[in-house]
Length: 123
Image (cartoon, rainbow, N blue to C red):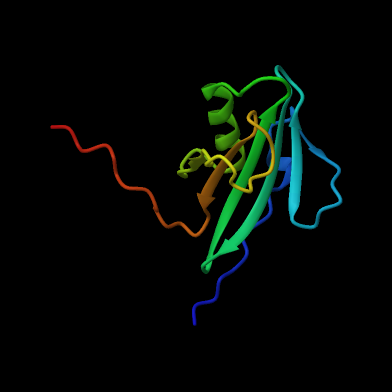
């Protein structure tokens, strides 16, 4: 049996200075808020599914949807620039926390490249 190790927790000291940790009562979630520019909120949860660790990011901006730039910034800070992420757009009625302004990113932390290659090499 292959040992599945839990991923390293985000080190708050490695985050850009304008991302500040927030208090939480949860033992599995970590919360952050961006305090420069538009106020963005992020909840980070590392979850084990089918023997693979996934990072689940729930993110939102009060009152309006996030821009693609803001979503990419969140992905870079909390998942990494060199990792892929899925943006989940749930079906109506799916049991997902939040409202229409909450977006959910998922990334496989085990290093598996789980997405198809959609860009072919150009000659």
